[in-house]
Image 1 (cartoon, helix red, strand yellow):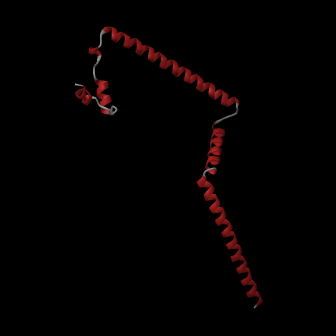
Image 2: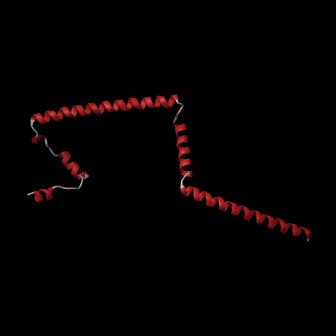
Image 3: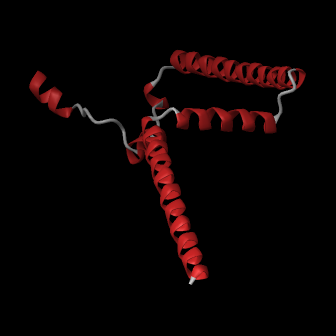
Length: 131
C-alpha cells in the first residue's frame, strides 16, 4: 500500500497552472464551522500584522530619510559614493590590473616608437636642409 501511495505523491513543486487549480478549489465544504471560524480569525490577525508591519516599515523609511538629510546625504552624494566604490572595486580586480599593466607597457612602447620616428624625421629634414 505504501508503494502505491508513494507513487501518488509528486516530488515536483507546484507550477502556475497547479497553483491556479488549488486556488480555485473550494475546500470550505471540507471544513467544520469551528475550523472556518479559526481560519477567519487567523486571516484577520495576519492582515492586521501585515498592516502593522507596513506601518513600521514606512516609519523606518521616513526615519532613514531624516537621518540621511541630517548627515547631508542626498541622492547625488550616494550616486557619487557608489560610483567611487564601484570604480575602486573594479581597479582592484586582477583583470583590471593586468589590462592596466599591458596598456601601460604598450603606451611606453608607443611613446618610444613615436619618439624614434620623430627623431628620424627631424634627422631627415636636417639632412635635406644641408644638401
